[in-house]
Length: 440
Image (tube, rainbow, N blue to C red; front, top):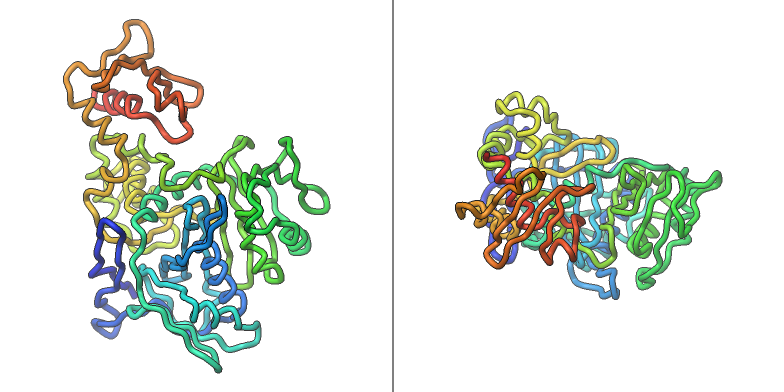
């Protein structure tokens, strides 16, 4: 059964998601459902959802609580996914509810956005491991029921900044690799030592030891750097449920992003952190070079037509079906990521599909450096190769800058590059050179 997303609205402030009538084996369904059945591990599912609500309601730098508690829910046919960002966009979290965690109903396919308000939060917090927990997710939102109480939440508007953040998160997460895993006992001991959510500033290397993990100030083999350990404090809600913790870090073992994946009965929870406590996913600019291809928008349209809420995307197969090279397909995935239509799964090591409202102007609105780079390449003579060198002189309209190759990518003499380097993607001048060399 495939349920199609429809009647979705993209606005300047956010995106409202809804489900349209769908074709099923029994005919057209005017009120499609993601899932209608029971949780096989009630407390793990309930506490996982409340953990997401904790994270999306938090600003971790100079901690301030908010009233945001609205995960994006996607059904893939074999699992349910709920995703959130923290209020400051420095933390991404996803709860994957696997088929083994659900019973009594067929899992559909589609995407919606619901709130976890005070009534729902209270109902979920009280569910124990032996209680019957019935979950209904569909066109009307989410309804959680036990023998004693029922709470219902309607679809809500998704913040527009989340769409920007989803794209950067998907791209940045592909660069993380598993570094070490803790057993249930070791994981619980680590979680118990995490600072309170208001304890900002505590950072360090998480270093694996024969008995678990310790926090150090110098790198070591297999260690993962975390800036702001308080950003992992939401794991405390899952202290008695965690069966293992896997830590992810950059493949080169250096400082950068970090992620932790907690295995739960019938589910798993991922918490991924930006490189710095004060940095948000929505401003990273990690997809800009892929967006510079002159055919990338057309290629993305071809690839998007082949997507069907797959939990694991077979990119080579999709590329063949769309008639694209692997490189073109990879760039096209960047466009789909910008639109929030693909995410990255650490366990599967693969992309997955989620559907969000179409906004043809989103790429330009969310990527002003790309707009400036197009403006530069559109002016004849604005980019001039330096004779005998692998460098270019770029007239950005307010001065000429020298763009060349550096160890970690492009270098430039502009103020933006001197301030950020390549940590937030290329500057507009370097991006213009990328576009110029691809077209010439």
